[in-house]
Length: 316
Image: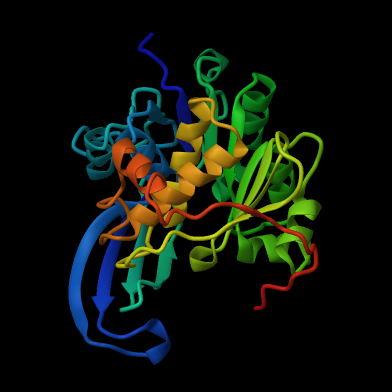
């Protein structure tokens, strides 16, 4: 059997048609400055980020069976192992149309009528040789595989952005490293402040809960530390925020593999995500390990501060 990558993942894999305009999205309209086609998707981009950082990553979701499949070729070119991914002639990527405003914010319109789970009898022999499994919201289609991976001792890193009810609740329960955008954290818990959300999402089975909040930074709680924490953002020039969250997940998984503690994992992931938004596209600006290390060592790198007030309202 070929070597199984340390970090596996299945979920969204996409082809993005991106349009850049000269006005912020709030303006309602703007002149097209540039357009491009790019490969994306939550898990696929996270795995590409792992590979770019020097880690070992493998995509194990459904892929097309054609040898010249564009998505397959891009994953391979990105350094992501595809040997263990099931193939099907009807497998296709999510198709997305993304508008990026002059402030770097974006609106994503997507068609996700695609095969986004994993084969139900995916072998334990492969799962057991990995260390981390990255999943996104579409993993509700393959909950039994996620549960088997958890039972086999893999760290389950969840990138959950929307809910389908009880199936999503079960998926969230299976994730010991839960990394959510803060907006979904509010929806999932019904709480308003980051501290309240972190507490509501915590359970004895968790290792870490992280809430990402764009230019407001990151909030987190870990088993290894006491208290709740806020890491302010790196101050970088934002070109395109597409894929920043995906890069965060991949970099977090990479830092986890290297044995970093909660604060170290979050700091590394936040720095990687900050670098990823300084270029166009979801993957074109994925950073190297050296670039992340350099940013973390810079004099203006932010430091985490403890959340003293559990009822601070971050607004709408």
